[in-house]
Image (cartoon, rainbow over all chains, first blue to last red; front, side, top):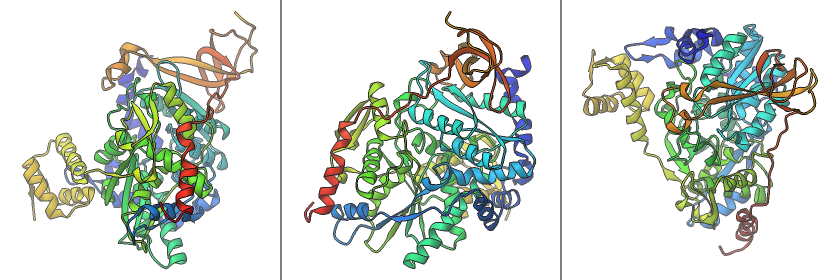
Length: 475
Length: 102
C-alpha cells in the first residue's frame, strides 16, 4: 500500500495527468518562463465553429437572451438623471444541466469519447459535476465526480449536497469528501484506478467550450439592438467563465466591450479551513477562488491553466453575500425568474454598475444557474443561522464574511467595491519571479508576461525593473 | 445490531483517507487536527450489519471498501423555514417601480 501514500501519489502527478488529459504541455514552453498560450489553445482545442457543432449535438448553448426590464427600471429609479444602462441576461440555466458549465463540459466529454476513454472524472463541488455527468450520459460514458462536501462534524454544505444529488440523478458516481485540498490526492487515485479522462475545468477544451457564450451574446445583441454590448459582467471564480466568454466576445469582433469580473466578497475566510467551511453562504463565485486563481492560474489541476483571467479583465468588483441574496429575490419578485443564487453575483454587481452608465448603454449579465432545495437563498440563510451566522437586515457595508450576512434594507444600498487590478497583477508577477528564480528574462518572456497582465511590453518592463530589479535582455 | 442488510441493497460507506497526523503540509491547523474522510454509495456485495467493513459496487462498477453507515441514503437538504429578512424585498421593489416617486 506504500505506493499509495500521499507523497508518493502526488509525486506521480505529472505522469498520471499526462495520461488522463492527453496533452503534452511541455511542447508549448517558450523562453525561460513562459508558454505559447494561443498556440496551446489552437492546437489542442477546437475551432469556434467546430465547438458550436459539438455543442449542438448535446443541446448546449443558444440559451434565451432576456432584457431585464423591471430590474433596469428599478436601477433607473435610483440612478441620477440620464443614467441607468439597460440590463440584459443570458439565461444559461436553460442548458441541459442547469448552468453554463454544460458548455465547459461539452468539449471535454466529446474529446474523451473521440479519444476512446471509457469515462470521465472531475474534481468539483459545483455545477460542473452535473454538467459533466449530463454530457457524459448523452455520449454513453461513465462519470465519477469528486466533491468536497462536509466538515469534520459530518455536516454538508446544502448547495453542494444538492449538486451531488444532481450528479447522481445523471448516473454519476459521487465521492463525497471532507474539507481539504487533499481532494486532489483522491482525484489522482481515481484517475489511476480507472484510466478515465480528466475532464478538468482548466484544459483548453473547457475554456474553448465557453467561447460560444461570448460569441452568442454579441451576435444576438447586434441582431436585436444593432449594437455591441458596452459591458459584459461575469461571475468570477476559477477564471474559466471570464476567459472563455471574453475570448468569444473578441472572436465576434467586439473590441470595445468592457469585460468586468464580479465575485462575492469572502475575505477573511480560509478556503481549506474545516472551521470556516460551513460559515460561508456561497460555495463558488467568491474571492476565495477569484483572487488566487487570477494571481496564480497554474494552481489548477493541469500544468498550464487555459483560464487566464488577468489577460482579459478590464475591471474587477466585489459584492457582499447579502446583496446577492437581495438581487436573487428581486429577480424572482419583479422579473419572474427564480435562479441562482451564486450565478447572480454578476447581476448584483450589474445592478449598481448600470446606475453609473448612460441610459443608452447596455450591460450584459452572461449567466444564470438553476435553483432548488439546498441551492436557494432560503436554504443558505437557514443554514447560516444554524451555523451561528448573524443574518439580519441592515447596511451591507457592515457584513463580515463568516460572521454575518446582511440583507440590504433598500436596493440603493447595493454597491460594488473595486478590486485593485494593478495590485493583482503585481502579485502575479511576484509569484512568477519567486517561483522561477530568474535574474533576467528575454524578449519572448517579456511578451508573455505583458500578455499575462494585459499591459504593454514597455509598462511591464518598467514594473519588472522597479519592483524586482529584473533585466530584460535581447533586442 | 439491527436487521441484517441484504446483499444488493443501495448503501453508503465511510472511509478515512488520511488520518489526522497525515494531512498535507499546507492545510491550516484546524484541518490538520481532523482526518480526511470519504463517503461513497453503491450496491452492497454481501449481507452485513451497520458498522461492518463491507464492499460495495458503485454505479461505475468499481469495488470500494469501507464502514457501512446507511441503507438507502437520504437527501436531507431542503429550503427550510421562511426567511423573514427576505420578505420585505418583493413588496418594496414593486412599490418603487410602480410609483412615480422613489
